[in-house]
Image (cartoon, rainbow, N blue to C red):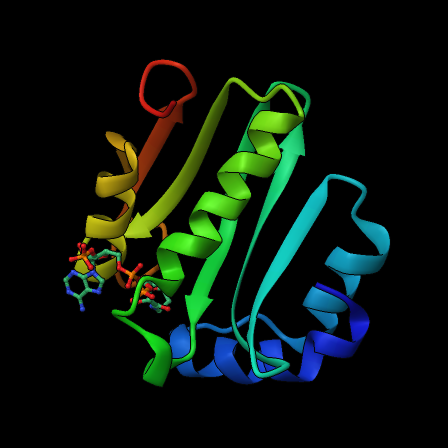
Length: 143
Ligand SMILES: CC(C)(COP(=O)(O)OP(=O)(O)OC[C@H]1O[C@@H](n2cnc3c(N)ncnc32)[C@H](O)[C@@H]1OP(=O)(O)O)[C@@H](O)C(=O)NCCC(=O)NCCS
C-alpha cells in the first residue's frame, strides 16, 4: 500500500466497517508506524481490497482486512490474508493474532479455513459487541 492508494482504501474501509479508520489514521500507519505493514490487492489498476498488520519481532497482529463489496466471495480476502501470512513468515514471525466480531461469519470462516484458532473473548471490545481473539502459530497451524 502506498500513499497513492489511500483514497481508494478509505472508500472500501467505509463500506466495510462500523467504525472505519480515517484517512489520517492510514496515513499515520504508512508514514510513521515502523511496525506497520500494509498491502493492497488490485484489479485493472484499481484497489479492490487491502490488509495490514503490525510486526513486533516474532509476533504479528492483523489490524484489518477488507474487500470491496462487489469483489467479495471470490477468493480475494484469502489472497490478501495469505499475502500477510507469507510476509510475516518471511520475517521470522512465529505467531500471528487478530480480533474479529463474534457475529462476523464471513471473516470467522475465512480465518478458520486459513488455520486460525479461537483463543479468547475480549468483552465489549467493540463497545457494542465482543471480539473473538484468534491465533495462528506457524509450523503448527500453517505450512
Ligand atoms: C471478511 C472479508 C475480507 C472476506 O473477503 P472475501 O473476499 O469475501 O473472502 P473469500 O472469498 O476469500 O472467502 C474465504 C472464505 O470465507 C468464508 N466466507 C466469505 N464470505 C462469507 C459469507 N458471506 N458468509 C459465510 N462465509 C463466508 C468462506 O468460508 C470462504 O471460503 P469458500 O469460498 O471456500 O467458501 C470480506 O467479507 C470483508 O471485506 N468484510 C468486511 C470487513 C471485515 O469484516 N473484515 C474482517 C475484520 S476482522
